[in-house]
Length: 318
Image 1 (cartoon, rainbow, N blue to C red):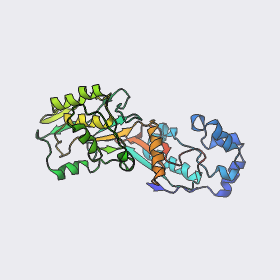
Image 2: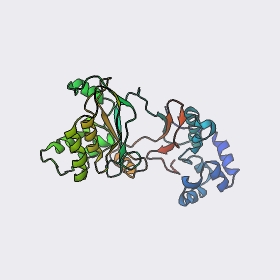
Image 3: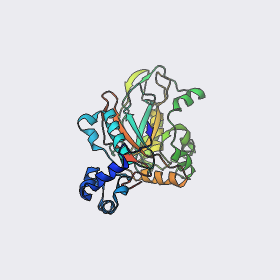
Image 4: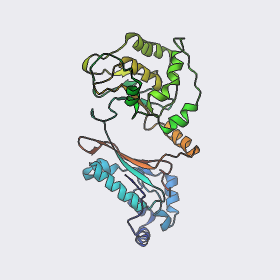
């Protein structure tokens, strides 16, 4: 849900609370601790008057949500909403619970491809390994031919606003290993066949020959019936070309009539995240301020520390 975060504390009461504590104690009370606030931010905070202090972002992460009662995603959400409201911010902050996928999720037919800041595939753990966590059940060893069915398979796996408005306008030329124009054709249609944040990048030639060309030559790794898909290694490939390798390896739709799709994303700590945010602000399409709570669907338990992100996600933003 999305809320404007207005204080549940009266202004008078909040000012009184601010004056009742020494600056350092007040800072600690409002969640300033360790890595959350650097020295410069702390000195800025100590120089503020009490009214300014209660109308600024004083917290960016909620590690409480990995402890005790707040490990429950809904309890964590309530805590964050209450604390954001107490900050009395002048901008909206959306709190969102994002659950891990299950086999029944509407996007379970997408293989997630994590990338580094250069748009090269690195896998979840940075070592190039890619995993698909569900069974792939095939009813007929036949590629999908209906354009309507192909589009239906992709309807929830779309490129992001940044991908369409910024990355799509960059001209990147890569050496066509095959020399048949096939690589350029794949790159040209990339925006239509995969989803997420991504841009065209060039794979290492040796890696492309050993992985993508090999996958194309050897054909499908799936057959009629249900099967676990093997772990594959994408090191040396761009995220876009890793998707091509996957599609060569899994050419048949599953029993639900969905093709294997690709969802590309940059690693959570990648500097590319900040670049994307800056690019969107430049074109007057700033991302929303939000706190995402990642939780396991089966248990409703929080699985990572919720953090505020967005153009105003900084200590001292009003």
